[in-house]
Length: 118
Length: 113
Image 1 (tube, rainbow over the protein chains, first blue to last red):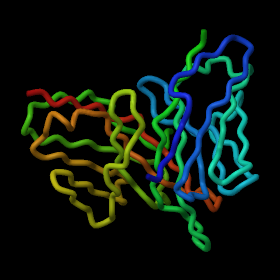
Image 2: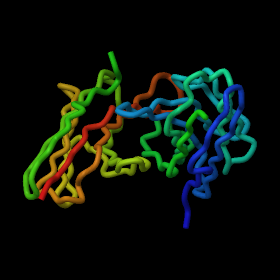
Image 3: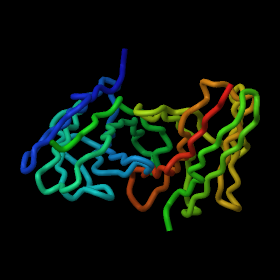
């Protein structure tokens, strides 16, 4: 079945440590996204990527880094510079249609990674 | 001002009740609108798109009012399984080729027996 796979489901970070969250999709979607969700809050965009080897900062990119070396994969690294990393992290993807200036496609989500500080 | 505003609730209703949620958005150029459902500690899942003419999917009805910049979701004959958080989502283009999704904080619904 096609879908988005995030791993691990739960992750613990020690102070000063970088951790990487995995996101893989086999939907052949061009665009991929990373969101952070805090309790009682809406989703906030961290980074997004429209195409391989290109990505853009979202609203809260500080303390995070990403790469997009393959279409299927968009890993997120939470660096030690992110002082409040405890949150629910969601990866999403959507198709892009060439020639359209606005994408009206809804996004499909992975089942998330819960990150906590040790 | 936030892009999308929602009443966080919670809404507590008995089975069989009709309940309505509203959501307002700030960007008049917003193009696409959706309702997502998120169960506790799970990822959001698309419930339905919202079309200009309004649309219905079984017990769920979504409406868009562009003049007042709000969208609504009506749930009729509530079921216990409808208990979840409902997220209002708006896609706005701010000069890039990629429409940005903006999420409301969500409205929590609990349906009791």
